[in-house]
Length: 205
Image (cartoon, rainbow, N blue to C red; front, side, top):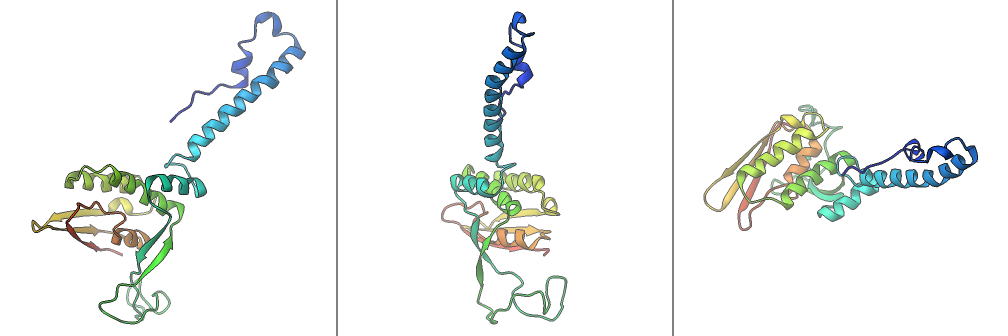
């Protein structure tokens, strides 16, 4: 949303010619007009502050409340079992300590930074208005990933397969960011049809 705004000079330009050479009148009129200029600026700042593209902090939280997704979300703990320096994301000093249980999928509550929260909210807006088709879901991921500032996210490819047995499979390839991987592993950011079972595979991190 863009508001029409005017400068103080623009308002003073409307003063009748016979008054323009009167310093006291111009000073008085400037005081009056400046209030209007300040109000316009404030209104513009409010619009920018609550624009999903530019909002931050508490303003982004307020947008999330309207969209239906909070900043604190439950995410799986990936790369959680201890190894000794096997690969760039594993190792004694990199892994999260956890009891080994092949059936265990540990989770945690994550407070998203503005960058990742904005990504989640972009996707949530598409989910809220989704028409239920595969093509529109894939197009939404493509558009959201393309405009995100997160490094490498634009290279992610998404495969959504209908297994024709009331199940479907998501595969996200080329995910380099561990936080993005955690987000995609949750059901918060998936396009889901009612009654359909989904599996999610994330590769690349």
